[in-house]
Image (cartoon, rainbow, N blue to C red):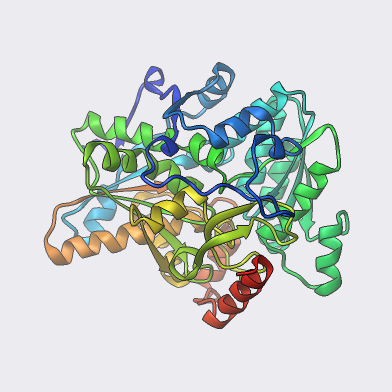
Length: 454
């Protein structure tokens, strides 16, 4: 019998996060104050973030120690397994080797607890009793709710309305952990009321939900805001994924030619890819790292590299990133975790400097890839993760056509057990490809340029 699961002993779990800011050839552009448009410093972020996370956000240290309290909770599911996808390889008839890191084994079924736990920990250390956040598909909301439960904190979640309806069981899981969940936009915040006044039938977006959560947190002394993707400290925490994968592949004498992850705000792709991009930068390796995004939200492939707000209301600092414009209203695609207008500043810099690649795929192709994976490997993936599977399958077929025996590693960022409505729709022929119109992107960017005075 072929060995499929490459295990890593608990004692081999990485004890530090990797910070790529120490190795970036081009430093990140500073965040700007939303009012003055001038560079901000750590003190400007204190109203919504704890200093422990703020210092990680700006740190230039290559490695940052993981607190023991965080390690203890990580040990519930980490190290996560790495598998060789023999059945998928055979079904594709490819000479390529395909490996996947299964982050769906976490308590909430995705990679999100890797950052939710340390974020709750650092907030608790500084005396906060409550965290407010947004969530798209619900993986992040579930994960922060779980982390707040472990650290005896309250959790308020603004869930994008279209996902609130599509994914009721993720909402149930958040509530089981003690969180309060609201379908965003709501009447609870000025940001939400303004959106509803303009469009009472708004499906919501991550940008809207972020505005509501930031407004909520900023209005209470006992509360902070928590973000599940995009920011530097989130990318940092997720690097435990790629560090583990590197050790696991070494156990069988392997090293990837390609590293693939889906891309929304960037956290799971960063988690699997940044430790390998480190090797490219410091050890002259030549790993091709490819982020796969939905054609309905083509941030890398059609967006602009510029300063933009992280939210619709313009409450957050401006970040230099690939963006579709913060007023971007994505279609109600089923991969709700990928419906964000901007990309991580770290990944945006890497993409701009051609140190990573990006591809956009349609919904139909992503769901088809998901079914192929389920039938061959026996795992139902999250719709977000199916974009990474589609990217890996495409690469494997390219290897087949070229007759190349390459090694492909992708991040299975979560399972799809709470996404069966989406699969029901796909099997019924209701899932159709959606390409976001270029004219809509142009209009959104034009409004952004006018706001910034460009």
